[in-house]
Amino acid sequence: MKKIVAVVGSFRENSFNKQLALKVKEMMKGEAELEVLEYSDVPLFNEDIEFPAPKEVSRVREKIKAADGVWFFTPEYNHSYPGVLKNLLDWLSRPVSQEEPQVLFGKAAAMSGAAYGMPGTATAQEYLIPLLFFFNMRLMNSPRVTVGNIGEQLDQNGKVQLSPNSAKFLEDQVKAFLAFTD
Image 1 (cartoon, helix red, strand yellow):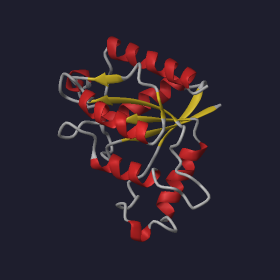
Image 2 (cartoon, rainbow, N blue to C red):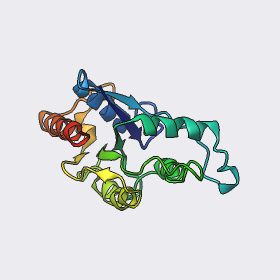
Image 3 (cartoon, rainbow, N blue to C red):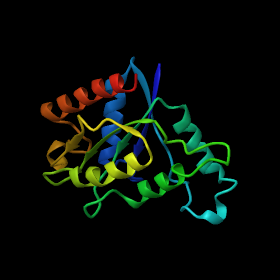
């Protein structure tokens, strides 16, 4: 069974993007395993501690290496992707050792996001694209999903309840990404 790692660009426990990742996990049931990557313990990138890598960094690198694909769920912070996501990517983009290259090279990648505004996370995704290409990831550029006006797709407890249109777009993206990882 395929293994997909979900990288959520927010550490908030009930972030909309984490909830979106969990919706994708449900949609993949029986076809692939999706694991939401826990990386809040990864330190800020610092060449002084790069070799040997901190155990937290080694742990996330191993998860990425074992995955058939990486799905980024990014919020939009000030018209860009969050700093925590950039920090993780900085660590993952570095060589593991002199013998082993960085773990993102050639990995299949997809991206989605949810936000309050009408354009959702379109700008954050546009800024993330060149970075993922720079790391030589195989980016599935279409379809991409950006769920705008997420406030209108929440239940009374703040849980994401996707509209039929949003759910359909996400289902289409799941099918496309599973095929893309072949």
